[in-house]
Length: 115
Image (tube, rainbow, N blue to C red):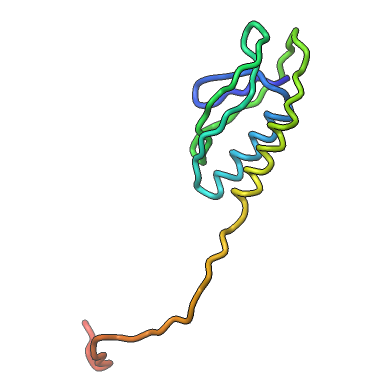
């Protein structure tokens, strides 16, 4: 289990989720995006809760190992979702380019200069 601290709050989750989240935040930092995501975490009673968070390039993330008296939940679907988000964020969009026609609507006088 890992204690994740993010933007002044913290929650307990699996090390796989914490690692996937760190990769996502790192990727988003390069791509300048800030989506809202939900991460499964354990509350102080050991119950599974969803933590909503905005992740983006200017938010700090800390993940610290922490002992938990509760069994580690299977959050493999969350890890997979975070990997999908990370992959999508790391792809450069393909833009279709068409032929460009350059024209000017003014006369250029190479003898004119400021000096």
